[in-house]
Image (cartoon, rainbow, N blue to C red):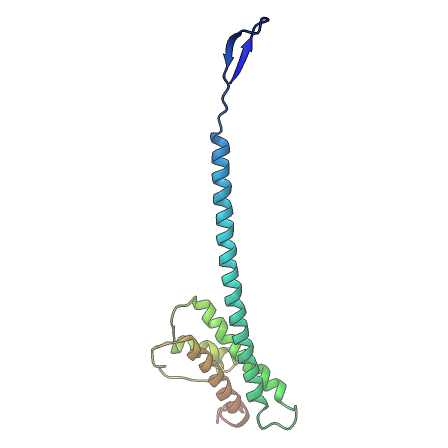
Amino acid sequence: MSPIRDDGGDIKFILVTSRDITTLYEDSVADREARERAERMAEISDVIAAEMGHRLKNLLAVVASIATITARGRTTMEGYLENFLSRVGAFGESQSLLADRGGKPLSLAGAALPLLRACDAGSQLRWSDIPDGDLEPSSVQTLALVINELVTNARKHGALSDLSGY
């Protein structure tokens, strides 16, 4: 509010002005909401990063234990690397199977057959009905390592050591 005076100093008019601050208020609300969303997203990202770090440590612990188990009883490096990489590959294949399922249960047949194919043993084997049943993720990982070990032994000493299968 401002008085408008004449030449004699008397107030002739009052000038009243107003300003619409609705957009300023709306902008500040939108800015606050955007900031809050960004803060929530940052918190979620932190939780995801922490979980990924935890899972990575677990996977590295598994790889370390595979390395240790593979080294047992060996006095030379001969054959170690091939055996180690085969076991890590089997473990990796189990991770792929689990990731492809997106947290859904995996049947014994749904796990065993792709794992046998991944070992390049699927075409050399004949199988009858595989019992049905869902496996927990840790069981799929164990199954992958067991299948890998059985296929490795069968290639060295058993039915997969020659084309006749005997």
